[in-house]
Image (cartoon, rainbow, N blue to C red):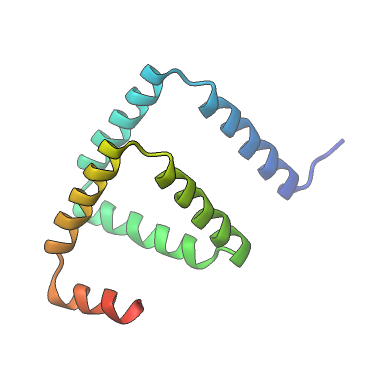
Length: 111
């Protein structure tokens, strides 16, 4: 039986989900470090391409997908430890301070 592209996509998604759930903490940590190094080793051009790709990907999401994403991040935040929440606050604070005035104004007008 031949699967439709959508069914193949769904199967792959489920398979990846199971794989990630079955990873040990050590494997998760290794994976996290790998992606961190990979991003650090990217050129500015590669980083820019990645940002553009993610931006287009988000714009092409359906409302349902956007809603799922919101729910995911909401649950993720709720499941964080106080220490993790504090680290996140500090990170966001530094990130906001490092923005240009134009970027800050853009954020203000969007909210």
